[in-house]
Image (cartoon, rainbow, N blue to C red; front, side, top):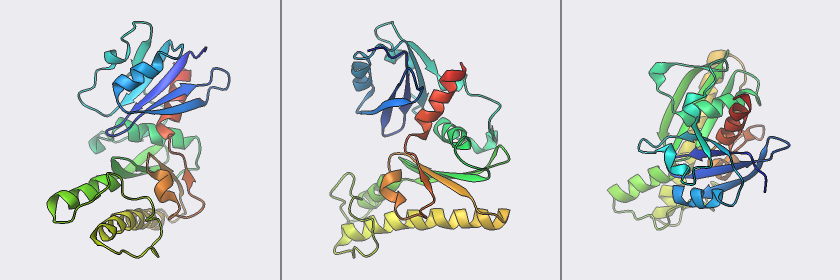
Length: 243
């Protein structure tokens, strides 16, 4: 199987391997790896000569991905374009959020908002080619876990949110109450922030939802919000094509 390039999004909780279609320069497939060792095993089934990765884990060593010695492993931090979006250094925006904003720029009209749903939930505002504002708070699982670990309420499932997508699903126990509280407080918080942005700028905003939990939560937002769970991978493809 001839695949020259692959891209890898190493998040805090989820690792996504994107295999690039050699002709269309788009994602041929997206594979969620349980660990970096899994990614290494999967890569042995493809003829990959170059791998561009994004990483948010402080202890990660990219050389671990090239155990065969046949793959050129590149850190996107060294190739991040400086002619797309300006990021305020004082905000200390993670590489995953930067890449999501860079990819969103090609999909949306400015000003726009990128909301990410993963280990953390984030909201970033891009206007006039600058990330003017970005906020971050615990993601769905982290919030539920914090309640479970610090109160008498036990959350029985590692990912308990499926099936709670409607406010009319009335809580019948403490877990239901916590899960719906976390779920809908996230939805309402994001809508509130977007409303504040729109009032400040005096114009409506395009919005893209991304990250592992974006599809789960997207049906609570306006229908014109774009959902693209793999924005980081798409951004990596655009960058690898410029290298």
